[in-house]
Amino acid sequence: MSRILIVEDEVKMAAFIEQGLREHGHEVDSAPNALDALEKIGQKNYEMLLVDLMLPDIDGKALTKKIRSQGFNGPIMMLTALGTTQDKISGLDAGADDYLTKPFDFNELLARMRALTRRSLDAQTHLKNGELEMDLIKRTVFRSGKLIDLTTREFALLELFLRHIDQSLDRNKIAREVWGHEFDPESNVIDVYVNHLRKKIDQGFTTKLIKTVVGHGYILAKS
Image (cartoon, rainbow, N blue to C red; front, side, top):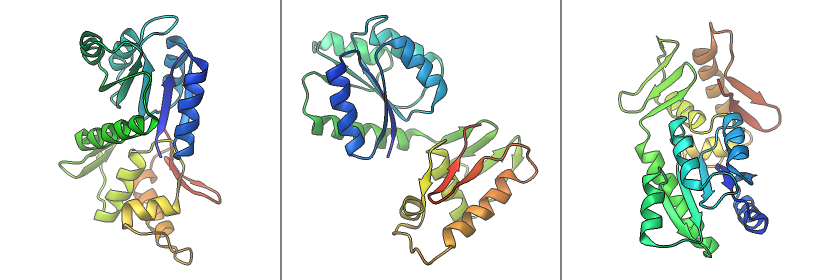
């Protein structure tokens, strides 16, 4: 599941994309213009943006440049009815990662999104949430400059949380991503590991990052 923002002023198109993505398990918000999009981006950590080129206030290229200048590093796909080579080049030069021309097949949109997600994950070697930082190359974790020693499994668990900041992760997803299999409802191994990680990450700090979502799982709160 990814947290996605659709920036699209055509109501029917936005609703079509939003419904399809929700049916595939994604968490989706929509913004009808650039101003609303910037406000939402300031409030949530989105993992991907789908941006229409023609918006009522500023165009998608200007919005993309603005978003990139503010530090958003996730994939941005530009959607537009303009499909010339120059349109595509200018969109990519503005900071978009891909360009899809309307009308499009929804399965192609999903395939392009999967490719962007894979590319983004492969490119990320440094994950950060406030003062909590993880270097995937050096295999180190720091919080407020303090080195935190983690086991291999704890490191993988924290990486999962850092890739889904402010998103509730259920035990089945944690088990699949970290252990590689479905969660055994009779086992408390996930809870044990989360508690170990919580002690190492949160102990001694006023702000507690790892929180329990009762009846569901766990969440790494945005710092």
